[in-house]
Length: 322
Image 1 (spheres, rainbow, N blue to C red):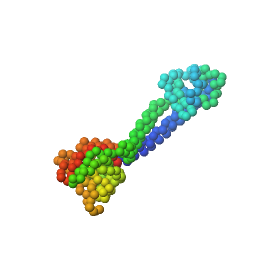
Image 2: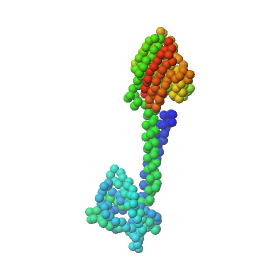
Image 3: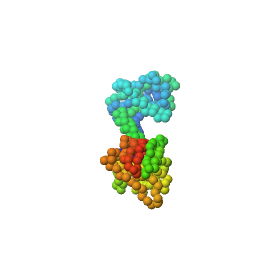
Image 4: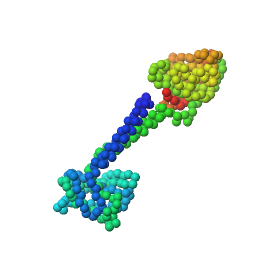
């Protein structure tokens, strides 16, 4: 995605999907709960329909009261309902309570059944906050929803990270831009020590390049905002008044062989134009070894030597977007 706002839209969509998925999980758990019963040695339990049900234990987290208990579900005539243990138990837990699946029972019909719990100690009978819960099978749906929550969370985090990198790439500014080299204009040599970069998407097509990468190689620090805008860049005014010296390089990062180079030097009058040189692919590559990432650009510049201009500089700078 080239537009950071598409990443922002994706992030919002992921948050909405997360909300819907979490709501679906809670709804699944509520609708799957059939009935619950206290910890008693023997009691009647009524089921609204035939079919498979899952017996779960519910209580405070890490409670010891369910250890070594056995469970039987009997028909009104005394015969036991077929059951089997759950090998891969699922745990649903909150801050203080947890529910664990134990066995499944195949009910032949709806109605009342006798629930017997073996192994209860007298202090455990009727223990508060401890329940036996019967639920409809819902493992497959719950797993699908959990997978959906995981994927939506990963996508939300990734879209947020890339959005922040695209819009606010200040993390790269911790390692500031630098230049190592010089520019010689009309016999005067200027040592270049600072590098700044700005990427303008140029959606309106008013600039020479789409997108347009601007690189300033300067002899001093300048505001990053001086590279922003269309043709009347603030850095040009800084150069006319002698507040910065160096080079302004404009190019399309996909076509680095075509370059516009503006000489940042003080002019005699405040409204005088700065000299801009245009280089094409036939000029043996003014900008060389260009490496552009979402947050940083680096490379080298070598101007075709003339009596008026000579330059050789390597640079690396964080990229800011507009």
